[in-house]
Length: 211
Image (cartoon, rainbow, N blue to C red; front, side, top):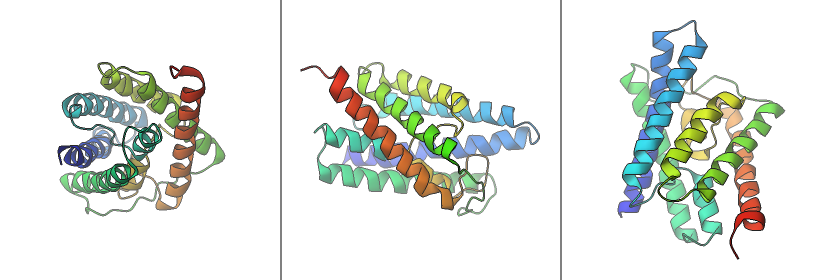
């Protein structure tokens, strides 16, 4: 039971932090998107670090792409993976709705922010590829710092600002704010993230896994 609660609660808190910090950044500096992105980045980095560190004894995927890869590795069953994904999506939506409400918006506030184009599709493939490779190659003791550092950097070196998470992508469609995504663009982002995760897993199996 603890691992399921961890996946739901951890994902909810993470995307409450992602969306809430984006709204706060916009409130602090409406005309300066650099300040908003920096605010968003710092909050996400801190949230990832404390969430992974705190929930590590139980489960810290918080991401369907991660659960999918760990299922392929045989570390979790198909049943567990399916439950994790459902909890992660539900958690992300709940966290985003809470962030909306805390900042005075309607809980369900569908995004009108377009995020489309081949360049963003490729960006999400690369962002998710990098994230999964960091996770697969990190030791248990270093994964929290590694994931937080990678996402913090990828916010700035990818044109998509590194969503790299299908659950978070779905959740962020529920907020018409800085961190939101138009629902019409969600499927393409999620597809790119699955491709990136698969590429990372294949490279890991072919090159890095110990035989």
